[in-house]
Image (cartoon, rainbow, N blue to C red; front, side):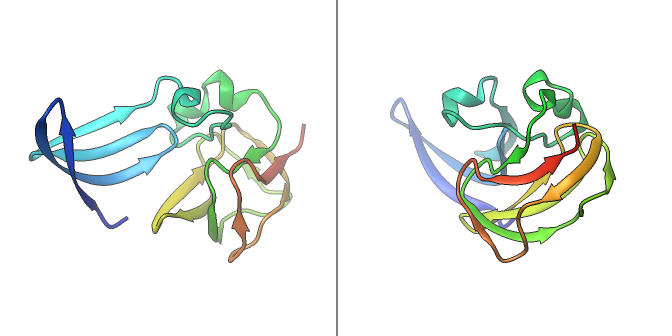
Length: 138
């Protein structure tokens, strides 16, 4: 991802912010030269009705991602790359596809281990928030 430079005002103080990475669990940014990782404790507070997908093996074990059901788009965008196919055995946190949103590429990872039942999207396809991307065997 190409870093995005912003000027942010908080209580009247100006901050120079360079956003380096954004995913459904947080933001990695450099603020006035100091690196920060901002994590979302409650995704619903940031993106109401979003179904989270894991971005790390630790996050993949969270109950919300491990509950079952299909993997859904955390945001609208375009599918850039599909990395798995039906029948593949996957691990929690494994890269499944790449979704480009607002000119930023987001790796979408598996919320759990299992077997891919179907990949519902293809490279070049546009998706809306909450569209099904991948279905898992139950």
